Length: 231
Image (cartoon, rainbow, N blue to C red; front, side, top):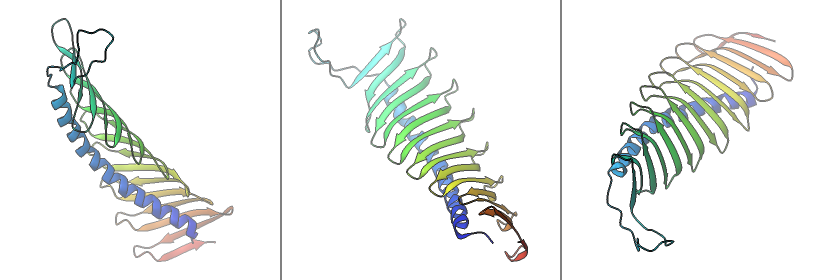
């Protein structure tokens, strides 16, 4: 049978996967909140400067707007409710990049020509993270460095987690998931590698481990009972 340490590693890998499903959902909410902030900051206001006529003095204002020769805003630096925000626009007037600092930490968001969020780099209290989205605005790749180690999550076009790779104090782990987000394969390494294959009911059917250079293989029925094992 599988050693207790390997079982612990596999169980933690499953918990990590469930956590990152919630993270992906939370990113969608965060992106919506950022979009509202960008619209507010993107509305140009009149800067209130102190002592504008004295060269070499500090200029203080609530908002700065950088315009091109046609009077179109190219960049807006302002202060939102949660902190400073720098917004950059392309020649079409579309918001393409936002750099902000709020109570959770600094963040950089990059959008494509259609306004979809494609790259989001942020440093939060629980560690830095990088999110990559597709042309439809769906999160496809999430890289996060937490206190217990790095985590890399891949999602399909529907936003469902399909693979999760992580490294922590228990070793390296890889989980694979079907189109419904259910785990069908777990690969872990601690004192030795371990592999679990599951059926459509999320029941472990095949378990292969190597412990102290000794391979072990076990087969299970639909009720989780061992039907065959070696040695």
